[in-house]
Length: 125
Image (cartoon, rainbow, N blue to C red; front, side, top):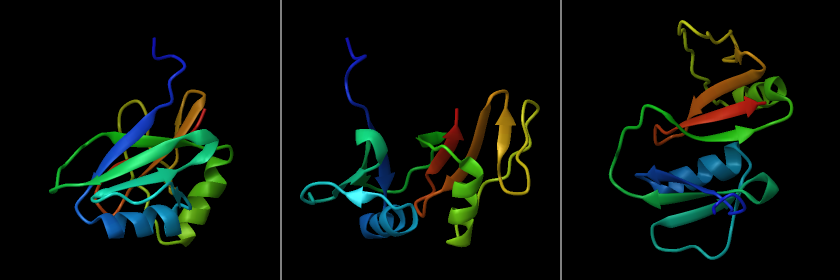
């Protein structure tokens, strides 16, 4: 039923202008369409999008969206050079290295927080 439907990640932001600056200038996404009051739609690769909507502060302790990349180490290094700090985790099943990369079987992951505190993943599957 939904197998061929496009998926849109939805992420909250207290300050939508701050979120727009981070997602466009730091992560390199572009704004899609005309701006709406309190809503920002951003284009990522392969037709995927993120909708950021303005609301009061919330706290999610999970990954809100994951970007799939080909060269995870290069992307992490590039974002680190732009001032992004990657999360460090030490769980029983995996640990991150000094760059913030975790090897989980055949999957490699890294996590960062946007200025609103939302956890974003970077993955190489």
